[in-house]
Length: 479
Ligand code: FAD
Ligand code: 2HG
Ligand code: ZN
Image (cartoon, rainbow, N blue to C red; front, side):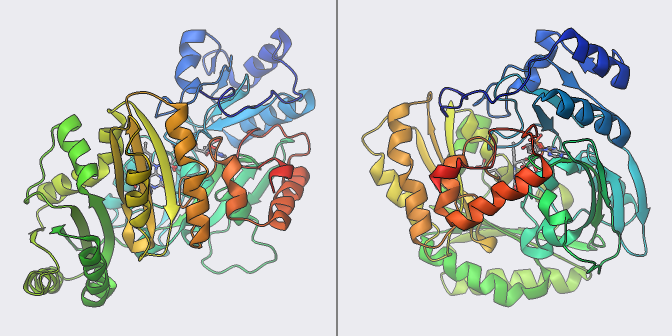
């Protein structure tokens, strides 16, 4: 897939020459520049193995100055670049489409400072999320975001995609928790907006332009992020439910009964869990049900929190909201329950090809899209139509799998899924971004004037269009 599927023509960029390679070698040295086809391969392909580019060069800077020198040269030469973090993105944004030079942040992995009074962590963009989490846990803090890809994704990639994840219901989005950003613009200029204060109203909030712009406006080199104190008590409930109506009742009562200690509220349908059971051999510890929910609480008093969660479970059982449920406070049991939820992407991927949709919808409409899709695709060779996600935030992941990519299946999903989402006031990309795959869907959520303003901002910040071309911005006439 890639340039042909998405009908993209190579932009008017220069092609890499030996002279460019010499310049890059002068900046990062021989060992931090990959040019062998076999070494570059992994950077050309995405996590899902759904898109493939043909870059011939990967650069691995260690400092902001090196990033600045690389971009200055690329801009002068009109060489297109593709910033890459952990390469776990699900929208095809982190890989080149043609021969863009890949700038990998994987060696920009220094923690710069942590202030245990304010909870502000400052680090380079290439720090892996899980490593930041371990570092903070030792100091009694935690990252305000958590995702299944934490072992590989990097904070720079998280910020650039405005990743949501499993804790957003509690700590909010990165637009709130990221306090400051340092980024390098296409022309090599360093924009130091590395504010570490919680409050800062000094003009336009430029950091927001980098949060979620997927490497199209600049390369994020450092991040200052506000981290909460790690909770003293953590509890998880895993529930089985009979119908989506019951899921909505459980959602309501979890918000009401658990209030300030609710830290995750996740939904999985039976189809999603079957993928994990069949393809990854994990087992659900409660009886088979059409729907499951994972509810996590975190707080400062274990007796109080455990009691609240038990009470919630008891009420839910008594009122027939749930048909089965268990509660865990022990770390290894909590981990096993979370594994079921976090492994769904991997479980579905093992089917073959996954058509991925990540939409926001009003909660009462949330699951309809899965049912509608199931009947729409019933005569086609699909393996599963699964729905799961962050129900507490109104974000569902509709995943459809088939043995291999089929244009016919795709044509039956798109644009229908976007039209449907837009009709009910939802978002066609809740948390994974637009990348390469969804540029044609932006207009379902944004009016022409907004798309035009996006293009104007891009032109100001990257007039030659070298930063991650073909991504995020829809063609101007699609508005
Ligand atoms: P990459 O994939 O390398 O890049 C993503 C985008 O950001 C690309 O456009 C790239 O060009 C750009 N980019 C990367 N680094 C920089 C930088 N320093 N400066 C500028 N641009 C940059 N996402 C969620 O939101 N919530 C989830 O719960 C979630 N769970 C996931 C679970 C699994 C198993 C997987 C595989 C993915 C999941 N994702 C989730 C998607 C993905 O992990 C996130 O989008 C993540 O934030 C990407 O980080 P990364 O470092 O891998 O970035
Ligand atoms: C999750 O919530 C991720 O598990 C991935 O956002 C969702 O693979 C997906 O569709
Ligand atoms: Zn998600």
